[in-house]
Length: 360
Image (cartoon, rainbow, N blue to C red; front, side):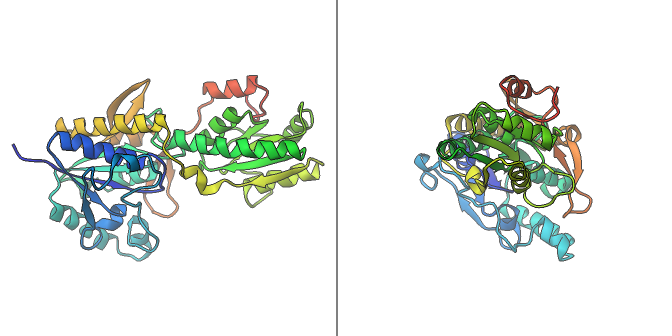
């Protein structure tokens, strides 16, 4: 029987859990007698002479699998990729180079670990991967991918943001002060909502739910304490105002006589040792991806649904998402998922006295 040769690459933004899933793919493939080739810098590493590394547990030992970031890197500024190829009018050249590099590597299968943008982009350019089994594993701190209940990196990001706010809460109490904390998440409020509930925030503002600034101010003024956290997702907007969302809210609070400061955890949300739930999810996704390769599946994504891990077709992934046009890649529509009105965490937040906007 031919010894399989599989490739793996990480693309898009980094997060905790990437090294765990890489390690588990290495281990599971080794048990099956397969070779694993790591592609450096995602699709950047396929532009020109392929930049790869043979992966074994000696190369990525288990004690390093918990670390954040990606051992394989996720790409670098200035490199030719799907986005810059359009800017430089080199799309045909770029696509040709990707196909050439994959042919040179002679892979039986390729695992792409990416977010909704990378996965949508891969499906839109699926002819590039037509000669290999193509499996996607979802990762993102935004938790904005359809057809999966969890993505690698989300739980650790929630923990990182929660820990950040836990420390702020102590200084907030010392100075009778409110902190407006701006979370990541793009246009999806999952990270802000989950961390906000975890810390007992006084208010959580997310893109999916409209809010009224006067109601927010009244809520803060009537709070049982004169300090606390107001969690603001980076995707919210405020009519007639521009700038960072936390700054916009802070100015409104200051004008109302509420003492406050802003805080921006920024990329610390992408960092931190991978927590247990993300390690477990990464292991389950790696196992599912390797089983999919054994079963001859292609153009599929691993997914968690109601506790079960399975594969879903990339066609279904794209069709199930809320389609949004990418402003930097003409013709590309990204499949997005957002917080649904019936999300039970919304009603929990409301019942706990957290202001979350016009939610009934």
